[in-house]
Image 1 (cartoon, helix red, strand yellow):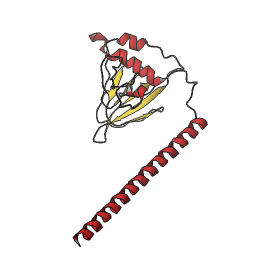
Image 2 (cartoon, one colour; image 1 turned 90 degrees about the horizontal axis):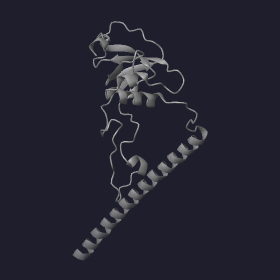
Image 3 (cartoon, rainbow, N blue to C red; image 1 turned 180 degrees about the vertical axis):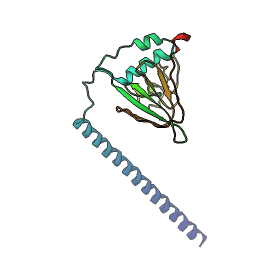
Image 4 (spheres, helix red, strand yellow; image 1 turned 180 degrees about the horizontal axis):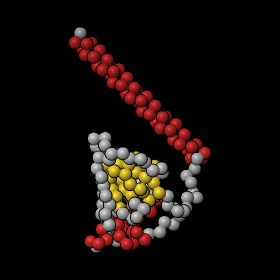
Length: 195
């Protein structure tokens, strides 16, 4: 009787375990199928809407190169850097304080750019794929010779060549904003007398 009961418990456990394996296998298969569908949709969209190949120059790259010069003490070179494309438009940004007030508003030459954008990938994984085999991931330095990512936020240059950074909420547009009663008044002073 004990043997029969033990055999029944083992059989039930085996069926339950096999059932879980089948459910897990079905879930894996469904996930793979969804990934394949997503990939095929992406490939179709690439054919319909390919990446543009006729962009003359990138405002993002220009800002990153200019910032690299600026933060490394080469401000004259940063200000004299010529954009190799069409004229840079003027944009406008409003900065929001944590309490919902307005911290300031500025004109922007070109656009705001993420502080985490870089001219180089952060590591060789970008080039090799996520290979965890014998190859070791080597972290690559940015143009300033340092490693890692930056603080979250954005940066921009004003039309008069001043560098600005902000790590809060902002609104950017190509139309000027009418701001009333800003919480903080920020005055940009001419610092050339101190240089």
